[in-house]
Length: 277
Length: 277
Image 1 (cartoon, rainbow over the protein chains, first blue to last red):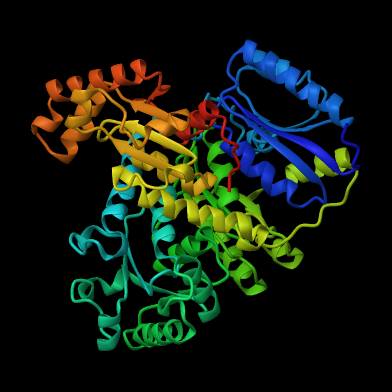
Image 2 (image 1 turned 45 degrees about the vertical axis):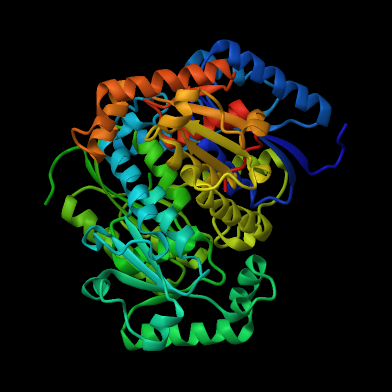
């Protein structure tokens, strides 16, 4: 039996993917000084499955000697009713906003199964998003500089400054067609934009990073290489940053930023219309 | 002035990326029969920026003749206070769960800026996630079948059945190292698993898709090609599905599923530990 005072079992439960419950639960729990063991249970759609889940929650309550915390979003009333009989604290992640909205809008909600992350929600936007992932993959790391007229954004930077994960996140979450191009020695000596990118400088942005951080990242890939040396990293960063300045390409330092933060800032900088999937 | 009764301006506002506010706002608004125009305002961290945002909300309220809906999460009290003076309905996406949690846990929360999607939250887990994206990219579409011992999951299927976007989503959102391998004519004639994958069948899963849907997707890429023909699609799908059955590889039909739903179901099937970023 776990007897640490501030330990809790946490469940994220949904009749859909449980992504919304999990995202929100994480964000809220991060504010409390507790240790947690988490379990996500998606697609709880039937009475039978609900009974299993109830049993699992009760078992954890018994083992730990404290009530588990359950963040959930379930539409079907019979399923919800069973889950709520478990020995736990319950947080209905959507309902706590649905009730005030209902009042303010003076409208009745019509809850729908699997609403948040299903294709049916908006098939055209889903297709566009998958097409954006494909476009972005085909234009990763300078592989192709064709069809740049179709790009929403073009990112430049030295090798390993965060371009690829950022582009994939932009495509996957926002349906944005993102091209990235790494500067190699040759471009840097000339300090010029590639001619294919020149006509699209209005949608071109730079990424940079602190020397220490770049050395650490490159070192992890090729330990003790010239590529990871302070001299090389410093030289590349200096050259590329002066290129950005000379060419008036807006740029961002990624050293302390996650892909979510880099992507969000790029959307702000570029004025691209943002819509989370 | 917009005068449709059920039209509303919607704002998602945060001192961080606003991803949590936007995700939740979408999920809740999807339940109401209203038309919306949405705007996301991340990184509202200063009094000056808050004043600008307040002005923008008030302007929209005036233009539309109805109060905008504001989904927000802001930690700094001075900033929050200014925003809340705007002429709008407000929904604090985290607080509606923080209050009951505070009561149930009998603990005080300590709200922190940029908590949800920052690197600082958990640097090791962030590095792991970026490494998973790199591994997954290097093992996309059969490009490499080396280091499969490091894979968390291996996906098989015909060309264009959803393997690549699913693998990238698994890597980006869950930090999972995902390999995907497309069957080409040659493997299918032999109806055998590639020998490199054979030792790892315990973590191998299949994706399949309905013929009509596959034809539509392939047609979009190569219109009127043999590749997109009913005969070819049917043949490939039949052969691959019988391979899955003969080799006892669990498989999933992706026809009506989003990458979120495919990924979530694969995590369930595989028993992989799930943790959203």
